[in-house]
Image (spheres, rainbow, N blue to C red):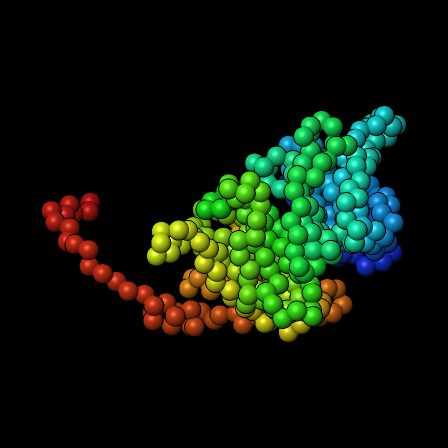
Length: 356
């Protein structure tokens, strides 16, 4: 059973993104009120704002945490056509009960390469170093690198990947299995009836990331994409938020010529009955969370037949109770088990010793 605990965010406008840090004890929120708030969880599980500041001169669309190995670093992107990198620094100790040093966030750099709204920003997996990718409404993915992690004021552009369609979101794949530096991007373009999710990977021949696949089954505008953490699977999973919820299974296969390629399987889920806005996975990829225009958070789990099913629906306070759809009765479970269970004789135990 899931409990819904409301948090008074005190943002003055729409909240566009909520992101936990690596350990899940800190949280960052950003809003159209042009501010970013950092939240910390205490020992009783209560969340409180520890930092809040105006970060941009336009709506802030996304925020991303860097791996804690690089310190307390976040990146933000905005309608003001910029992305910024922020680092938390410790100040002088203040006279309080805990006598703890003050903490504040300092802007280390502002990335001004885009000529249109920067719609998404995300740090790369730790094994790639301190890389940062941005997506823009001009259809360009820009990959930045900090050559010196002790000096976060320098972020030269390592690569620009141009697309014909405007981009709304992106996601790094954290796994190195099968394909290195796998990156997905989505487009919210509605005028072109073509695939709206694109896959990129690093090419040894070109020595840069190139487009390797387009998910042609998804032609509606895409608002979010998220790769699942790879916990020993032999394939990758990509969640896509669009008119409906999609899960794209990505497998590596060999064609008749012996060359390797990707095989895509797209699964569609229409339970939201409305546009889906955000998707995210738990750390083991056993649970997928999606939100939509219906004001509900849906939690998806894979059942014993390896089918993804909605396990719970969470509603905001005042909009109705939280419930779990179609709970199975004990009689139904017993019937299902009897219909699916099979027993095989594996052998006979001889020279049995009697019990004393």
